[in-house]
Image 1 (cartoon, helix red, strand yellow):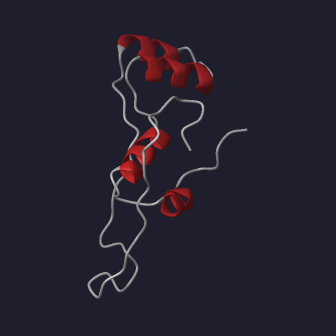
Image 2 (image 1 turned 180 degrees about the vertical axis):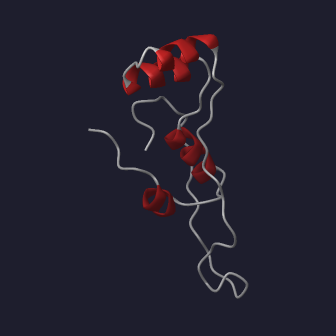
Length: 95
């Protein structure tokens, strides 16, 4: 899930447990997985230069962007969602 980034591996993973309130799904409501970053002067320059996506992403991560997969892994580690649920909404990993 977190490749090519380095992320701390959780010591355990949570799974959904159902109740009457969640209709035995283990989930109630929605949880957002976000990828956001600040448009710094360096990022702005890359966007204006029609830079390839890999270079833009690399610069954004270097400047503090938290990638979508890292955000998802953090939600899993906190027990807010499961890997199965994350795979339903994330784009497939790049090979």
